[in-house]
Image 1 (cartoon, rainbow, N blue to C red):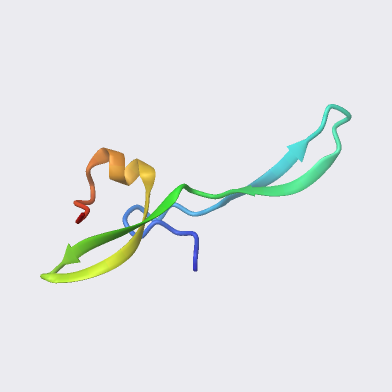
Image 2: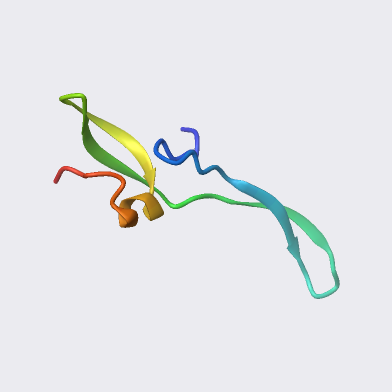
Length: 63
């Protein structure tokens, strides 16, 4: 599963953990994705949506 929001296209960001001694360790920040059931063009389907899109109301989830 790709860690990409299907609404806004948000993807993981890459960087480093930096210790007090300035040792660098690679890491990545992944978006908070939720599996949401939605209706697209009259057809019910499940998509990956980030929590910021859900909060903003860009997606109408079915429950």
